[in-house]
Amino acid sequence: PGPGTAMRWLCAMLLMLPGAWGDCEQPPRFVFAEPPQPLRESYAVGTALRYTCRPGYTVAGGKSPLVTCLPNSTWMATPDFCIGKSCSPPVIMNSKVDYMTNLQFGATITYACNNGYRLVGKPSAQCVLKGNEVTWDHVPYCAPISCLPPPMIKNGQLINENTDFTFGMAVTYRCNNNSFSLIGDATIHCTANDNLQGIWSGPAPECKVVACKNPEVENGRRLSGFGTEHTYKNTVTFECNPGHLLNGSSVVTCEADSNWKPPLPTCDPIYCGPAPHFLFAELTTAVGDRSPVGTKLRYQCKPGYAAASGKSSLVICLSDTTWSADPDFCIRQQCTPPTIENGDVTADSFLFESVVTFTCHRGYELKGSSSAKCVASGNGVDWDTAPPYCESQLPRVLCKDPPTIDNGMHNGTKGTEFVYGSVVVYKCKDGFTLAGAASIHCKADHQYRGVWSEPTPELKTEASYLSLVGIFPLLLAILVMNV
Image 1 (cartoon, one colour):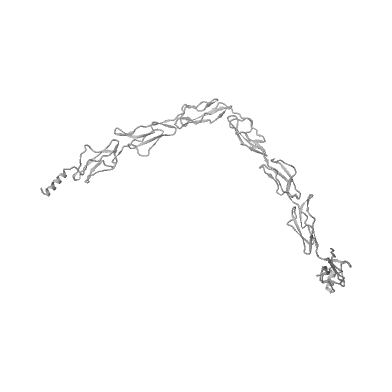
Image 2 (cartoon, rainbow, N blue to C red; image 1 turned 180 degrees about the vertical axis):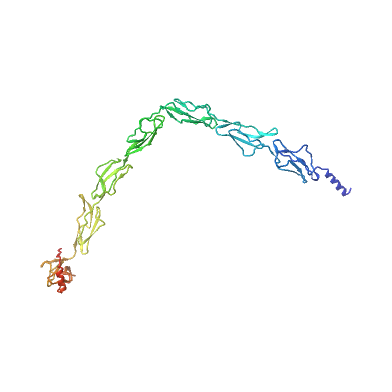
């Protein structure tokens, strides 16, 4: 046969094969749905199969269960057109349900009971298929937690009259009469342990006789808790007398064993340490290494010192264990300031323990100590050495009688030798007055001979001077210096 015949034969064979010219093979399988039965080997393009949701699933709203054969030989389906059926929300009294997703087929939830209840059954449940519907595989319940009846106590009784004691319920005890003290918590309540078993919050209290001894603290006194009888939980507050320090607690409580807790304090005497030392004073009496508060020590000033005005020499031990004293209650005494003729004295002060130095003027030599110290002497102070003197190194200078002036006179004695530095003063007779200086002095010339200074006073006779002389009497000092 020719080529055309062969081509027609091949086409006829292809038409006879499954899926030729766009047919689809068997439809897809889904977990949530199944295709209509029975299935064929192939399906023509455009075939639409209606799937049926498997048990536990239902058609999702707005989605089609049809699966269609397309020209490209593939099946087209809406995704997840069947969804799991939902279990009804679980309702358990006195519980709360914990779930993070929806309640559809296959979902798991966890149960937890409210406070005061315990879970009976498994703590979780799953939404499972039962027949053609879904339901929870099991549902637990929450049972209330209860406690056994509270214990009875000796010499006391319960105030409550309940017979059932569930979680959170409280019972209260009281003693039969006032001679007993209730020890412990008067009220206990029903609670639960880690295993959610009912237990009481604490032991039952006791009713017993409690009597603490009347508390006394030596060197102390009470601020509260007066009286002589003290029972359970009575308190007493103490403070110490002046000069004493509280050692322990200031508040004590009468406890169930008839003892004070904490133990009674003590009031211990407060002491100051050794007496203070001063450079300027010393104790009048000997004392030990410690002295009680309020001790007064008297000091006396050391030699060279005297009591300061307005200050006390008493030193007192204070409650803070320190000594109180006026500052510098003794001050240094002062020596008489020394002088030296023809010389100088150099010193910062003349107080006790100070030192002065002596120097002579030019032409003089120091005879004696060049310094002196102010030291204690008897009840006062004095210099430790006699003061020195300055001796002249110049020849002895003597002047003869001073010159005379007409109508005047001087106060020098005639025939007397006048030593170096001597001064004579002149005065006028009536009707005359001095012109210039009224005095002259004995001095040395270049050969150290005695001469009188110049000029010698002169007299004037002018009327103006005479009138002045008449009004202002001339008062002349008579001074003769002898060395």
